[in-house]
Image (cartoon, rainbow, N blue to C red; front, top):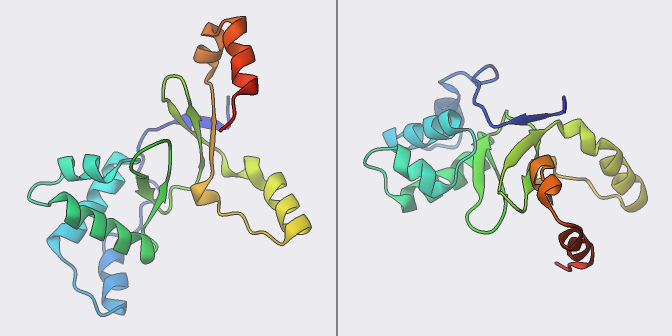
Length: 162
């Protein structure tokens, strides 16, 4: 499927290293080693929960990671999405895609954000609603898990309410 890719980090679209400093100073905030470490970890990990980010940075507690992620999102350097139950997953803001998550195995696949453009246009035209693609996640079953389903399992998925 050409429009989907598994999570692999590339730094092609990575903003200049000084962007954090510029944005923080515009708000009268300081650049701290912890803020730099958390942003570097998000960029290196691609998609990661605050706990995963905390594990990848030395000397930064999880509370500081959460606060830093909130600040980094406010200044436009990271985005978060809910890829299932539990903590949100953070990624670099320049990493624009939607998420496709398998209910069965938990696989997360990045999909081309233009796939939802017809839906976004329809919502805007019909309701004046502007879709936030950064939080857009589609749940279902990946090809492998769908192929492993029995006919009875497939029927139960159809009638399952969320």
